Image (cartoon, rainbow, N blue to C red; front, side):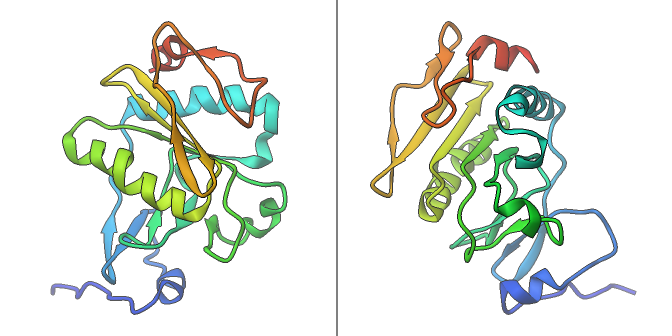
Length: 190
């Protein structure tokens, strides 16, 4: 017997859905699209960044790939590779690891670009637009294929783009100035 795919009329309806698995889904036009597992490279880079931010912000404010962000547009949700949340969000996320549109945005999101043009466009264009719309102050695009890291800073509701950091550069974070790491160390983590 073929099971009908569930359709959701609202994000709230989707939030109450539980298929009994640990699968992550994006809600696209009312339908669930399963999020494929991250590559080993992406996980290693995200874990390395996690270890760098840990002494700066503490473990309670760091979230890996399982943190869900409600966004405007399609899909209705995203799962960044690494997120730094606000202290006041820690308690609220204990029930469900989802930052809603009604909540303050996280302080920083990091996406590690997977190979392929579709994945590249998703991180550089679609997610950038959605994260900017949410008001996320800082967005990193870590690109192992081009060996660069683009750090976008929200200035007057628009992401300001500087030259990408390359292998010889130290990454500079507008919010976390105490971070001291080179692009080659981050990309070498994978």
